[in-house]
Length: 282
Length: 282
Image 1 (tube, rainbow over the protein chains, first blue to last red):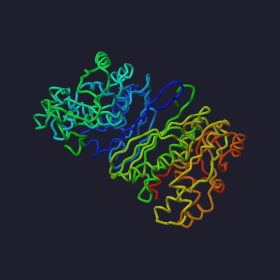
Image 2 (image 1 turned 30 degrees about the horizontal axis):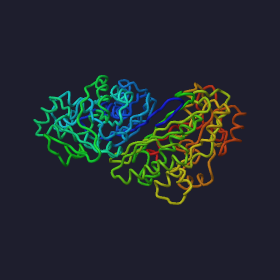
Image 3 (image 1 turned 30 degrees about the vertical axis):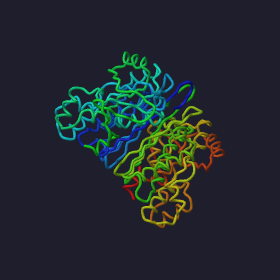
Image 4 (image 1 turned 90 degrees about the horizontal axis):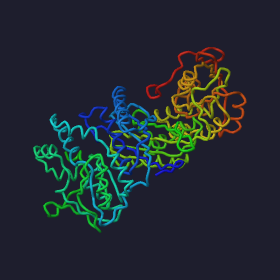
């Protein structure tokens, strides 16, 4: 966090590389757009407003590079960030790196402030991005909404700012997946948690697609990445107020405890849920 | 240029990719260092002070990525910039992208302010980086100083700030090469120039190595890139004052004219000097 003049700023960066973060099913515009969205999500998770973006891109031809930069500019427009500049270069594989500066109106919500007794809540829905990725990987054109959720995620800027203003104790954006990201919060905060998989907000089309693909919706919603929803640890009052202000539903999925990260399903403990490498896993 | 609070800021980004900007002769640390140095040079060319760096790097193994980031941190320490953060990822080819925020104490010196009658002066020396590159490409271990100039360039921060304070009219850092970069200044300023190749500051070891390699020292000093010296357009008084303050010698190499970019040698006009793709050219 930076204090420049009277304002507080946060900075983040995300690099996406062809073959690692996406494959040929993503257009260059999608890749540029998503790199910005991932950065905007980092700013949202601290309760900030995205302000300035620097973006560098490379591909093995100029047209692909410029199309990727068009996606960067489209996302800057969408999320209200000003593109300050950047660099373009030749590269064997399409690569884009985006840096962002976001401005804070309140003290930032960090990962380290969760207290035992806090509720754990998530914005929006889980598993849609992973379902979209599976559809892309298998060549299914069908579930367009899910594919769009994977290629063009929408960071939760309104909910993030509201959570900061209302006094949430800890917050993180779900980029690696709930099972992995909640561990980051618990480790940083020196606490544990109990999460009920039966409470995860999974949309009907996500559930249906995952089942048809022979996958377990709750497990993928807990372990799949790139939903870019927010996980918030806060008091019951704050979660209720947040639900009233958020641009998407807010769902309580568990609570913060003294120690141990526990996932429950039908009242039984589920083990071996962990961060999921969603490329290795497909 | 950004006004944040009471201060003026400038931003820049540079992406370096294996096989395009460097080959296996550069260590990962060199690559990270040079990416920061190139950005610092952009800040120097506006008369700014480097403040904050965001760096993302990728390679096909974690060790290479981390070694590259070590080079980034080493350069941040060297040039007084604070590393705010960044991202690391897997990538088939070593790739690093650095973004920088620099702070201005004075109105920035732009590329667009050159006037007919201004002197054109360069800091330091030209051609050393190209000589070092040729040595690296040919496997010559000999000219260590030249190789170091190529791998670990030193941006001209003191001269850049002095030029801004003293009122230079235009400035650019020589990253693409004098012949190319002076055209950028002339185009932006709507002027021409006359440059005398006989006046280019070429060190004895550079001259000697280039001759031994069968190359023309003046032509390579004018067309080779990555010297990261500053080219300044300013009045005679400002150039004299700059020479007294700069950390390296300042050499007058020509003057700004009404139109046309002209290179002279032994009083004769030299044509076909242009920006040099220094990988295609080796």
